[in-house]
Image 1 (cartoon, one colour):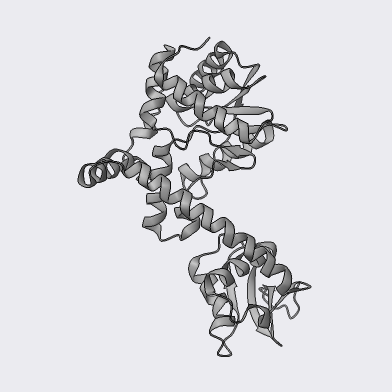
Image 2 (cartoon, rainbow, N blue to C red):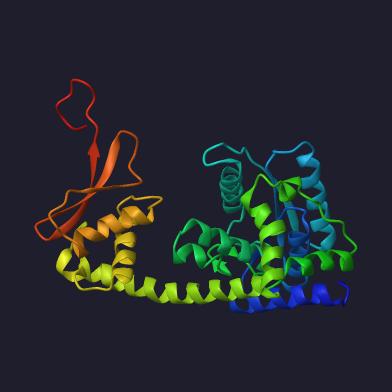
Length: 328
């Protein structure tokens, strides 16, 4: 039985509200930190046959011991099973990004048919929105994290980090303190310990909540525009190409979403705002310009979007080996 204390009750209520909308088997991503420990305890109290998945990134001395203790704590909470997943973290995109990819890949492979609940809090959401704003990444980034992004669930996006820490006190457990979470070499850490506290002081508090509300509002608006973009894409598509006349006169915000959806299907990845706007100019600012190269082509090729005979086409252009006269 969990203690009837304010913090753990608040987390249980958040988990219960999430599960009422999305019933079904769940696993919990457990790191051993305060957020995930509090979430695990609450989920065990609210759902049957909970499985804990503990990822050992192997990036710190003693990480295997930390993972083992986390798995043992999960079992003590009442999890039906607790599995340690040992991963190998690469270097592409920096350590933080590489660790995230390795973690999510391992969780996805181990979850079976279960949703995976992740202990992102309101503070994490506020940091994500600020990072998106600073990078000029557009509404998708400002929209932050979604409570449900299949198969990932985030029941604690309205819960402050201080509540999860207090819940651990109420539970009588000592969370693992990841040294990376206090390393000022990471932008997110400086946002957490320097920028957000300063904003809270300057603006009189409530900044994290305001950023969380902003993310929710932008996410709701984006969902509507995305649905409209799917309809427009369906009506504008002819084979693998897009009919220009179907997109001419469409509001640029909706047109660019439609183009983005089409390009992703055609193999584009990591589309930048500049690339998307250049592709959009093939419709909205057509002056007979040449094709636009976008990210996502395999090695030795370019994925190029061009306009011809009133349609947009995205095609691979291969680099010719020395002495060659034919495309592969």
